[in-house]
Amino acid sequence: MSMYVKDWLNHLHARAMGKGLGHVDVLINATGLEYPLLPELRALQPAPLIALLFEGTPEHALAQQGPVLVRLTRLEADHFEWLDQFLSRLHREARVISPLSDWPFEALAKHLRWCSQAQWDRGASHGLFCYYDARLFQGSVQALAAPYSTRFHAAAFSWCWLDRSGTSRELAGRHCRHTEAPDSPSALVLNEEQVTWLRARGAAERWCCDHDIKPYQYGLNRHEDLIQHVFHGQLAASRERGKLNDAQRDEFIRQWLAQNSPCYPGQPSPERKS
Image (cartoon, rainbow, N blue to C red; front, side, top):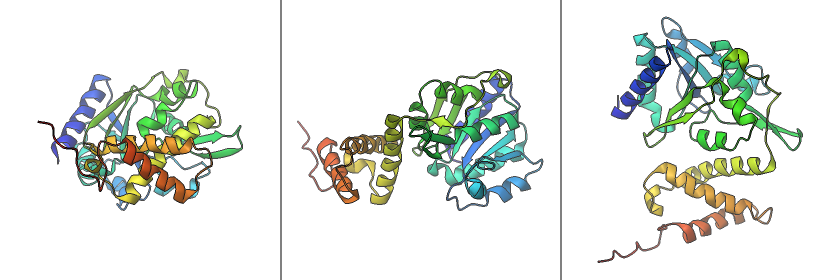
């Protein structure tokens, strides 16, 4: 096990113990996952609690390939040995978020299932709110406005995850008792600005993946910094409001990066000052 995976697991143990919890919940993004996740979880003894968050949603047919909530018993060695092995193999894909929660498992699963559903255009458009993707989590939830932000965070004391650089991340929740949580509307409601913001986050991820770019090529140190940088380029492209087709948008991003990065592929490195 890598040191930062070990440190993160120890952090989860400590945070759960500090809240008097006998469990740790992990939300696993199984989208496109080439790993026998469900068979391995179901083979554990004693069996952990498992919920497929797309069950009972319009994405029901994809339930076994979508987000999975698992409640691991904190003192069961087999549970955390499995999580150790899973993270050690796949931590660089940033597939795990841990909501620190004292809600009953079924209540937490119902809440997180609701959080995956979004609507916009005054209810005319519906889709997924992909907060369960740890690569997009912080940026996605920061786009929410009250009262949806308050409702989203109601189940969690905090949210913990490892980013792709192996850095431990944590975001405070707005915990309340599950019996006191306000009734959920049918879906999170997003305005035009939030939809633009969220699409730019996803587009930045895809752009970096499709072009196989590395942080050092742009004078940056971490992959997360690169994503954030390209995200600002995507927002700039979105402000062109329909003036760009796909090919033009791609070229716009290239030009934006060339003009706004400390360095750029194909350009000579800045001369070091004496």
